[in-house]
Image (cartoon, rainbow, N blue to C red; front, top):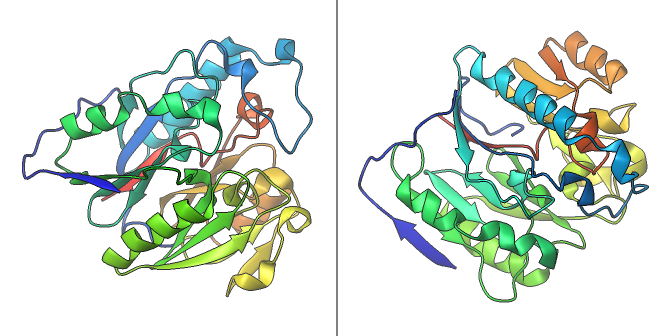
Length: 288
């Protein structure tokens, strides 16, 4: 893996996971604008939608509504838009190529799908130009290693990593070495029924892993697991220890989480869900 570090404090100009996030709310949100060819995104585990059913105009409006939840949160998040990749259909799912880790570390992945690798062009240079503040180190997966950010679930000092079609042994090995430097543990999780690990499970602020059992290979891997009744209810983003964001297409799961004491904001991301996306993969959260 290659590494870039700096002692400078150059900030990016703003444009505006589960357990293991910051003590409070807020931080920096990295996002990437939906490309014009969004409807051509790759599909692996669901029926391919007709291109005419995906509206770029609606997707852009949903993306902006998603971002606004962070911009208006208390405390508000700083929103940074990564330069667009207009020819890369899946590039809006920025979490797959960038992973936020402790000590101001950002991991640049190496996507398992060859068509997604051009999304990396210019990313490392952009991050290096904006090192400082919350981001102090950039590390890159190299060689034949493949790793998708959607296969990483952070819960405290543990990172669960999916054994999916998008992440290989070399990718997991490079990640394991990096996590050792950060005093974190890696636990491998089989993923055969979904695109990524985080397509099947995410985690609440208290460390409870939530998932839709029909697409979870082995729930017993997680010390604390809560089954949810809707597939689109598996994905939660933590705004603060008591404040969550999730899809509006999971009303029963929303009610379950509210009954557990969480404030839950919902957002319509139907255009991205039709392409196997969810609320987690639309951003990278760098917590303060």
